[in-house]
Amino acid sequence: MKYELAVFDLDGTVLDTLTDLDNSLNFALDKFSMPKRTIDETRAFVGNGIRKLIERGVPAGTPATVTDEVEKAFNEHYAAHCADNTKPYGGIHELIKKLRGAGIKTAVVSNKADYAVQTLCKKYFDGLFDFCVGARENVRKKPFPDSVNEVIKTLNADRTKTVYIGDSEVDIATAANAGVPCLSVTWGFRDVPCLIENGATDIVSDMKTLFKELTKS
Image (cartoon, rainbow, N blue to C red; front, side):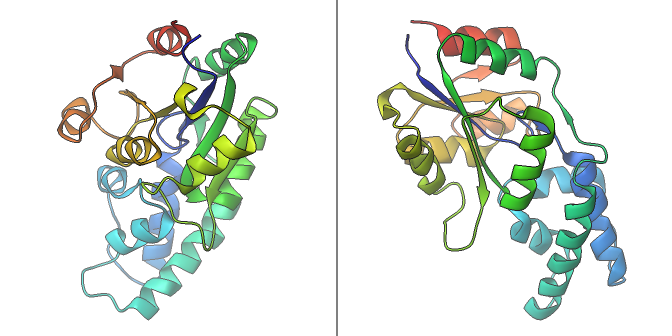
């Protein structure tokens, strides 16, 4: 089999988290009397972690100390509401179960705060991933390969038989930096032209095709 380890992005790849991210962002912005953002704006802001989401969401010129407070408000709200509207993409449970049945290890690497990654993976995918990791202090976020490298080491996997699956330009760069191929999915937060513009070479639009790509010899 071509792959022995499939590493998934979380937001926009296995979970549709956009509404809850948008709600928490707007809660935090409103708390500081800042203009709210549309869900399409939030969609464009996500991918590089919570801090970048907040920095992109606050008005230009907002002092860093105020941005810190907005980020704190976001985290407090999101910790309590990260699963209000979030849901797995259709067919993802079956896909992961089939991969595991085929002997392929599965993992999650996300720029989402680790507290939320652990909460959501436990709630929606309990026992379906061999390892899940999010953003933590003193660990460089994607597109740096640090967390992917950690997963490979922790699971004693062969890098040459590892693949990364994601929905954004950040994931494409992460895979390249980790020295593994990337499968880009179309059901997430970026459209096909954006994926192609950022170097996507293998694009899949449904779970059946993704399974075939992951299990082909």
